Length: 194
Image (cartoon, rainbow, N blue to C red; front, side):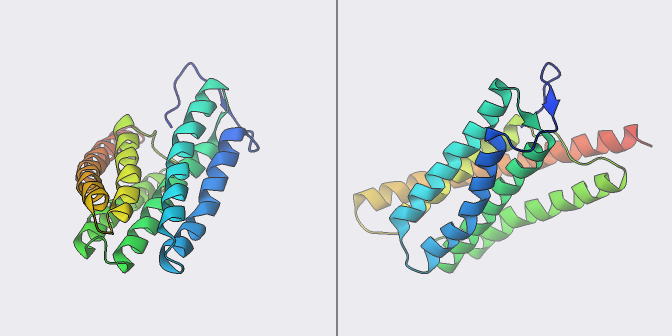
């Protein structure tokens, strides 16, 4: 979530938005278990939907209730990345998505981790989240349950697969576009801190 100049950032840890982000983090191993062990796709899809909704809700509440915190700014993107990674691993192991798709998304996060490591050495602890990054995450978090639902037969599965891949392609494009913007932000910050 991006901090606006009119909003106050708090150092409080125990806030409703932070609790929602922490609960989302706890759902990651549960999701992997649901998708891989009992193959309880219905419950996995519900968990992904709840995670996607709480991703939006924690940011909304943080802004509305003036509970934007540094902890929340760290927890929220970590939860997003872990859900994306866990879902990709689960879908790959189930044969629902190809390896190239996983590599495409994971390589973007590896590049961004490198950029953030360079910034950290200069004393910068993170970049403000851009709307485009949130839109990309939104698309991917909608794509994954649809792709999982599409791992079946019949018209519903066929429709879910088509719509899921549309969200996946659009989300991947936005994900990389956001990365280009983040690298540009990082370059400007590094130039300013010399």
